[in-house]
Length: 426
Ligand code: GDP
Image 1 (cartoon, protein in one colour):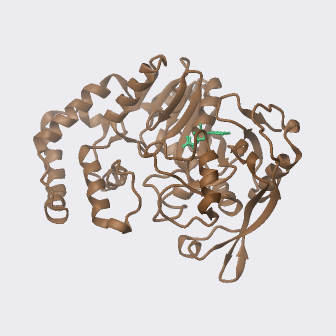
Image 2 (cartoon, rainbow, N blue to C red):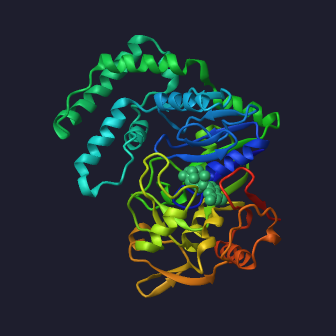
């Protein structure tokens, strides 16, 4: 059976924790999109880890971790990450890399940096990991697939020469930087070949066999609905689809095999990068939530950037769950809210004097003002509670209020960062 674990918000909802937890009963965990530009933080019996490329199932010795064709594969980052978890005592994970995955090249990172510099204050807040230039090249059909590393030298050198013509015109004339050296790019590819060779696999065929053999497969999404290039807050989005539906494409499996879609929703909001964020809060109120948030504060796992903070947004989350096709919601980081006397929840957007609960396109989103309902807090620590009925009444009311407004069943409540901090409902 295939399950997808995806974000219903802006990312950083705690997908890594839910994946790590569900990986216990899974055979295979697949990353199907995105690159090393965002991260998951995972706390388990080996310690605390920030993963950027590896799937969050690498901590078990019974699982196979897969980098699907939809991923922006940064080979040096992948290998550093494998080394760092092994150095922290995790058994060497079993990893497969799709022969159809494309590689982030050093010039993608360079172009990302150059473009951010050029845009100055008007930048999109890129993490400068090369992700946007990578996906641009993929769709411009000048990217390098892992399978091409095994092609003959003339083929690769011709392709590199062709790429250099275009890149060097931009580098020299738009960005005023030194031109790319084709020989260095060839060497770069050969280094990647040596590193990745033992892991290369026809992933789609492997997963087809696994599905037929009844294996349990998890698809692990990066970021969340709001960052999807089609359905999110374009242009303040990422460059690959963050939706469960794309899991079928980015892993190479039939769409109808995805039987459960777990949308991870955080009990308050946080976002990184620019873009409208209707329920955003500022000042001391935001600082306190940021400081208490997640596990050790709401700061980017990859960049260390302080995240923007806000109250739970039912409008964005209802839309985020619908667009994911969520069958279940995992409601996370609820324990963090235990310090509040009252908790505002955004239940509508006021746009040009009209209140709506439908998430608008970006143009109208910038005009939206939050409409809040204020719920009473529960004023205690809920970590360690294992049964839903044992949660304080106001905490249950908060969950049930959100569930009603997002129109999707909350079947899991996460009340701490650890694997066992989970309460199942229904
Ligand atoms: P992801 O990218 O969606 O996996 O999310 P991140 O890893 O960026 O952020 C989630 C953070 O919250 C991590 O530091 C997790 O350890 C932490 N976390 C996840 N679930 C819970 C929870 O229920 N309670 C608390 N306090 N922290 C959590």
